[in-house]
Amino acid sequence: MISFPDTFVWGASTAAYQIEGAVDADGRSPSIWDTFSRTPGAVAGGQTGDEACDHYRRYRDDVALMADLGLRAYRFSIAWPRVRPGGDGPTNERGLDFYDRLVDELHRYGITPMPTLYHWDLPQALEDRGGWTNRRTAEAFAEYATVVHDRLGDRVDCWTTLNEPWCSAYLGYGSGIHAPGRRDPAAAFAAVHHLLLAHGLGTQALRAAGARSVGLVVNPVAVRPDDPTSAADADAVRLIDGLHNRIFLDPVLGDGYPADVLAHLSRFGEPTWLAESDEKTIAAPIDLLGINYYNPVYVAARPGAPEGNGTYPGAAGIEFRAPTGPTTAMGWEIDPTGLSDLLRRLHHDYPGTPLWVTENGGAFDDQVSGDHVPDDDRISYLDGHLRAVHTALRGGVDVRGYLAWSLLDNFEWAEGYSKRFGLVHVDYRTQRRTLKDSAHWYRSVIARNALPD
Ligand code: GBH
Figure 1: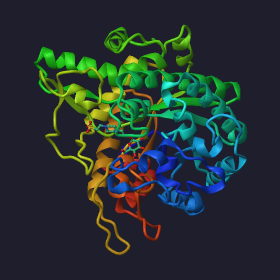
Figure 2: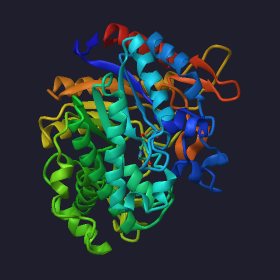
Figure 3: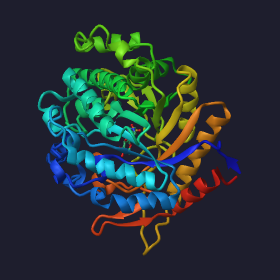
Figure 4: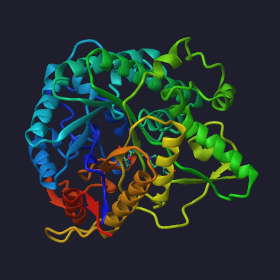
């Protein structure tokens, strides 16, 4: 048996726009994803989060499912446009009421609530004023964080500020494949900075309000050279590692922006967004770092390749090698060694910060037969990655918990409902939930606190 520490926390994650639906209920305003999903061509099949899993109305049943699986923690996100429909300004108490009920319901079953304050659903009203390219959005985030803490802080101990600022900045403002769909490298880097500033200001605000534990969720990636003997590939690794990982981790964990990254950004003009004490604000101490891990990437120096995969502004002549091994339905390479490598590296390069795996999982083309969803591919994905977590633990890495992505099949952003990541299958016509084999498997892992040999 491969046993985990007694204190290891098992759970699952979701995000508001991906599951809640009820986008007009109780005073919620539109977010950038409501706008983006209505833009022709933006989301597969023209789908939106209008109904999603109808979790807003079915949360009691969904919490009962979590209890049935034996989850000890549940990471969900709070929809800023429910709480502050204008982005800043008046608070909408009815929006907070939902999270109030959800938190109470979780406590009824002894499940620890782990809210994330921002999982990509920026109030459209703020985007209309520049969104994450506007410094003011970071301040508005800290105000919103305080308002949420005022309501839930008596029952929530552990907070995370942002989910994957890399996606918000690079996909939202750089490549435009996520909301708000802008394509402007300079805007992407301004967004990186204002997201980091929001994290710093939000962390300070939560602490001032009395929060016990505050952290950030990132999606660092193990960047590997296509040819380990090539010096040019090693340079490509360094650049992509800088633009993907160190640009977030170094400022948050205390060192300010890396010099090589700042040098790279200078080609897009002066970083006028970087004010005097910002790096100090961003380095506000955190109690946990959440890691969302899906796959490693391999990069190669190839003169003439499209710039940084279309995602990393200014990274000319770098090709992202197509997967050579098995992939998930997203086309992402399945390789759990990426997770153990990453955990070891974070432990080594940024010592002293407790780590959590806040998301990990795979999309597969599940087949439903009656009450049965046989998803061996997902079980083996999860099993392999949990072994990787265990390897890291054995190597002395401080990993506190594992939260599977995702509890439910849900709205997979630009892929709409076509990609299913859930432990629990959702029939979107009836909203019927069916536990997949992976859910039964996960329940037994949790119950034993161990994997079979
Ligand atoms: C997470 O983002 C999100 O937090 C969550 O909302 C989402 O539903 C979930 O993952 C599944 O997508 O260059 O082709 O190798 C995932 C962020 C960024 C992970 C890009 C995979 C590399 C793809 N992703 N990344 S590739």
